[in-house]
Length: 224
Image (cartoon, rainbow, N blue to C red; front, side, top):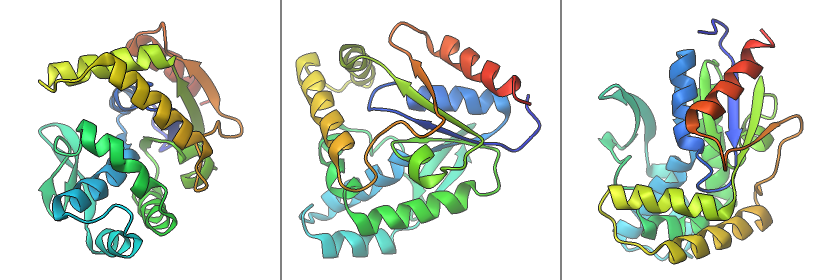
């Protein structure tokens, strides 16, 4: 276990395995795992539940300002709580995924989320994953990883996840959604997905999560 309280940023496209890898790495290091994307998902989910138009910026920003988000240890895992209630499972549906871009692309909401993410992680001892952690949230992170994988492999992984949860989807639809999401993430005006300066790039297409974590641990231990 590394004793220093590092800030570790993991970025990459949807389905590259960031959540699994970040959670495992945090466990190895004894750090706190933060899923930044869950914060945007939670606002998307709340807006959809309230029946808001996802193009009504005024209502969306007001909702984001009124919503209390925090990560707490629950059942031996870090869970996202919205206004005191756990929402980690509820926010991971195809419908939320398809509409998250409206929230992620909103400049005012993004500023609110980034500020909150920086507050959560400022003390160090965290592994935070997302799309702009190494470029925007913590550009001075001690370690910046960019986790990638082919679109086909990412689609297969998502399909297995949905199937395990009993969600009926077609792998062809998932692949199309991933390609659309990639394009939106990389071309959006606000904090586009890109490799942070000095980031360590890892292609996980043919690697197991354990192998990816081993590579990361090697790079971290080698610099201590």
